[in-house]
Image (cartoon, rainbow, N blue to C red; front, side):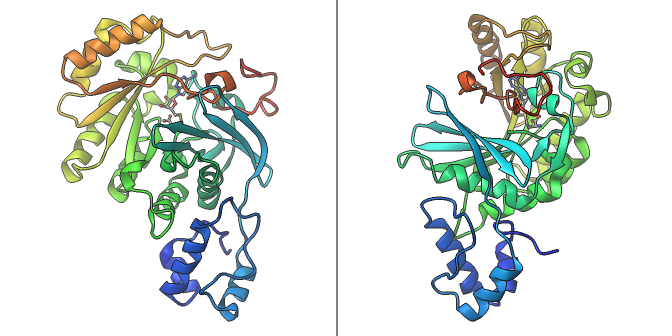
Length: 349
Ligand code: SAH
């Protein structure tokens, strides 16, 4: 089966177009487009018709259809996309001088984290690498000129480690020159802690990793992330420790969603620091973005700040990720397509 563009790596393009130069011309052409093309072009400057014609016939093009664009007061934009009948969400988050594109790796999700709205969808299908890259290309084209899309996070719908071949391919395509040429450290793959996939990712990719820890005891973690029974905290952090020895320059993040009276105590803050001691990881604290029916609530901002301070005072690098796009249900864990989730409507709609 021939793969759609933009899912081919530079080496594959080189082989298929019988020349590195032609492959580079195509990528340059793609990078110069002001919007995501709707189809493969009839011609590409620098690539002869004789070669391009058959290549174009062999390969299709993946262009997501935008079902809906929602813009938040804070500049965050959420795209509801149709990919050949599968619906996913992509989020563009502008910051000073750069934008981050948050992409989905699955339609729905293979995991069942109780605090995440995407689990309401169940698992629909795996996304292909070209469908992940196309999400980036589409959202990138709409980034403000003073905040170009230099970062990608695999933090949309889905568990990347459960679709790892396609995720690794997407990372390769996103980081290859001359376009998109993102830095490996600017591409972050986030996992709920699927240990075998995580170990493989750490050995095969130079991209950054985020582990969603979300608790400091196995008992609490298993309550909110049922898979913790298979891959408990010590095993996950052990894998990060091992990887830090072999690739010390990788950026590693530990995501910690704060739930009121569940994992936000002073004792949790102290345990978090102890668990991460000696590990070159930065902690991102994410106040829980609520949705109905979980029984979980969000700590007060004062509690979030107190937790943060307690962690930082013990020498652990740690930032609070205040929600972006909460008003359009684009914040972490709020991605779900209302029309697909039986009876479930995100709070802002
Ligand atoms: N499956 C991957 C990536 C998708 S979730 C993972 O688990 O990492 C991306 C991030 O959003 C994770 O850190 C997750 O813990 C967090 N998240 C999920 N639901 C959330 C919610 N309701 N509020 C805040 N953060 C949430």
